[in-house]
Image 1 (cartoon, rainbow, N blue to C red):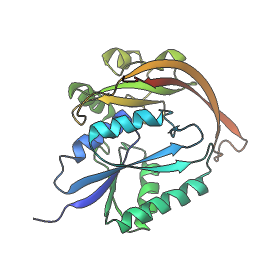
Image 2: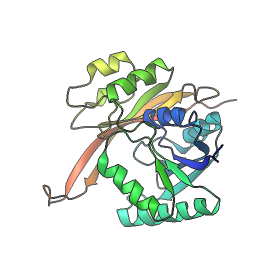
Image 3: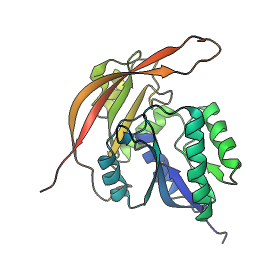
Image 4: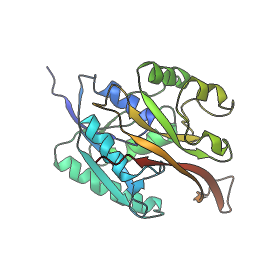
Length: 241
């Protein structure tokens, strides 16, 4: 029997990552040994999702896998991000890792970027839910017993009321037609707190909603500096006595 690839999984804390990990752990070709997450050290939260580090730690403890973090500054540039990622991958390579897995679904440019960056270190890439229909995927997520809450939304596509909502049939029905069912274009991000990959649910309460703007990268269409607006719903860990 061929030896399994020693694999680290790029863990965002959200629903796509949870479902991809669920599938990956049932694949005989890969052994998931560690989770890798980018942290905004300035805010002590998961990059993009804005979830507190403490909730991430509770999440991975329930999953039962060790966590490695990439510590990023408040607004890292791509060059700085790439350098920190390469250093993290270099250390993982020395630990014997041969594969990296992701929860991407259909963003070709992002997939190509990941493959190119990891090929330089001799790391194989794997995408367990790649090119799956997103409506089917979110249905599988709900039917499998996963639970998630929306922690971040793009303000030009969804109003603030969507932040803090549960991922359920009602949420899906309320999504505008131009928003992907899994938010694969960055329309919304989630925190997965229960499901078949967890030994127990992660407890939290909903906190305040905050609006933030970030610089958007220039492209062929937008040569001037643009900004993107996001609504975040803070999740508060439940303190145990």
